[in-house]
Length: 464
Image (tube, rainbow, N blue to C red; front, top):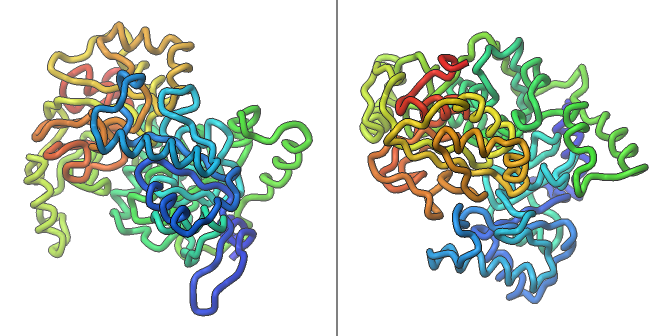
C-alpha cells in the first residue's frame, strides 16, 4: 500500500477490533454550536470530564449574524445554541473562540489560519466540511454527535478504514480557472457518489501549484462527491503557510516537525484502490445548473439534454430543473441573477477576496443585485482592511459584512428569498439550502464577481 493515508492512519491506530471498526486516536477535535450540545449533555449525564481538553477548540459560526454582532442574536434557537456553547466550554474547561472576538470565524477557516490544523494529524468535527483541513496534509473528516462525545471522553473514535483513491490533475490551469472550478469539474465527472467509501489524495501539477487557500477549497468539497475526506501531501507551500502561526511549533520543535512532515508522502510504489487522472486543459470556469454540486457545466456549456442523462436518473434530473427553473439544453450564460454570495468555509479566505476585488475594481455592482461579501474569520477581515480590499469593493458598491457561515446555509439572517437566483461561492446547492425555495448556482469568486457586476451569469474572462 504505502500511501500517505495509510501512514497517517496506521500511526493513529490504538487497537483493531476483530471483525469490527478501528479504535483511532484523534489529535484535534473542533466543535461548533450546532452539533456539540448533545455531546456535552451526554458527558454531563455520565459525570465525565473531558479527557484531553487542550486538544479541543470550539467556536460558534453557523448561527451568528453577519451584522451587529455586538447585539444579542434575534433568532431564539440560534441565540440558545450560541449561549449553550459558551456555558459548556466554561463548564468543561475547553478553549472557545467566542462570537465577535478577534479569534472567531468559521471553524474550518480559523483552524488552519491559527496553525491548529497540522500535517500528519487526525482531525474531526461534527460537520461534514471538516475535510477542509486535509489541505494541511491531515486526515480530517466529519463525525456524528455521538462520536463527538466519544472523542471528548476518550480522545478516540471507532471508525472503519476507508479505501484509498488518488486524483491527479495534470498540466496548468488556464487564466480565470481556479481551485473551485477544479473541484466542480471533478464532481461533475465523479457525481456526488463517485468517491463514496474512499479517502482521496489530490496530486498532480495543478495541485502542487495551488496556494494553501486553493487546496483548502479543493479539500472542502471532497465530501460533495461522497468521499470520507480529501487531503494533499504537505510540501514547502504547506510549511511556508504554517510557519509563525499562533499554534504552530516554534524553534527546535519547528525543525523537528518539518523533518517529520517531509516524510508524509505516498511512496513511489504506493498502490491505491482507485486512481483517476484529469487534464487542466479540459477545465474552464464552471457553474452548477441543478440541485447537487455534481450537476455542473462549463460556463459556456449547456444544461444536458434528457438523452444525455442515464434513464434511471431522468426523473431526478427533471425535478431538479423544474426547481431551478431551467430547461434541458439551455445555455445559462447571461441568465439574470438576484443575489451573489462570497464566503463560506469554501471561499471565505483572503485569496478569494483578492480575486473578487480584481474583477470589480473600477466597476459598479449591477442594480437589483444583492451581494453579501462575508469573510471567513476576523483575521481575514483584518487582512482585507490592511490590503485596502474593502475600499476597492466599497467603491464598486459592495460592503464587507462581519464573519460567519452566513448564506452558505439558512441558519442565520442571511437567507436567499424563494425563487431568487443566487450565484454562490459556498459548497452546496441543495433545494432550500440558502433559504426555503432559493435557487443556488455554485461558482468561483471570479464568476461571482463578474456576475455581480453584470446582474447575470457571466464569464469572468470577459473582465480579465
